[in-house]
Length: 126
Image (cartoon, rainbow, N blue to C red; front, top):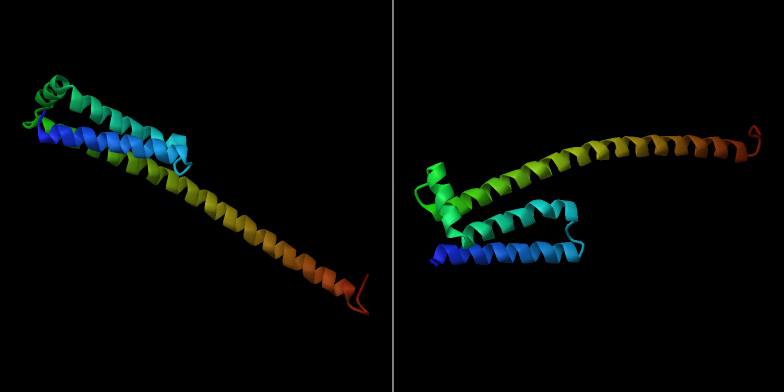
C-alpha cells in the first residue's frame, strides 16, 4: 500500500466514525447521514480494492488512479451540497409561510385585545 491509499482509508474510516457518532448523539439525522456513509464506504472499497480502482481509472481515462478516489469524494460532496441546498430551499419556504401565519395570529390577537379593552372600560359597550 502506498501513502495515498493509507491516507484515503484513514480519512474515510474517520469520516465513517464521525458520522456514526453524530447520528448516535442525535447531532445528525439518519436521513442526512446516508450520503456521508455512502461516500465513506465507496472510498473505503476503492482504497482497499486497488484492482477495481485501477480498472475504473483506466475506463474513465484517469492517468493516476488514486486521484480517482478524490474525484469520487468530490462528486459525493457536490451531491451532498445540492441535497442540502434543496433542503434549505424547502425550509425557507416553510419558514416564510410560518412567519406569515404568526404575523396574522399576532394581528388577530391585537384586535381581540383591543376589543376586550374597549368592553372593560367604564362607559364602554358590553
